[in-house]
Length: 132
Image (cartoon, rainbow, N blue to C red; front, side, top):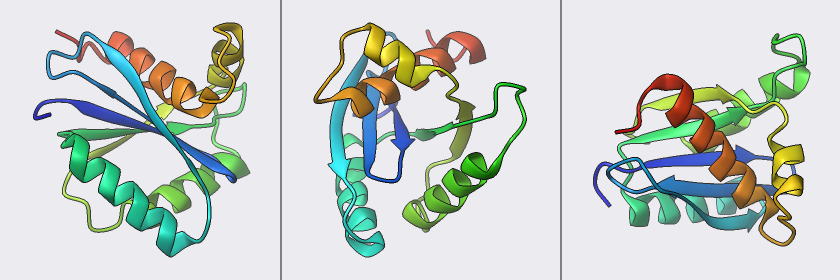
């Protein structure tokens, strides 16, 4: 879908993917990728992004409760850089503090990482004023 935004929740074992519609009003969890190898993860993620055709990618950044970037946030930046290398879409890193707790609160189980990605995107759209 042209005009949509995709969000990623990049973890050590899984990558959650969500997207919004082109009007940026409805956010939907898309899928959860089980991590395999860097090459396979990149290829599978590229297939999903190509299918969704977002104009921008939002990547959840696990900041410390103080709001600073710690070791985990730096790891996510490196992983996302590798996974998204060569992509033409702009990438925005967005604070993902407490999204896992919110996903659990919403009762997300099997697709929890995709729900977390959806929460990241909802927060981005609300806080950035990028919704329409």
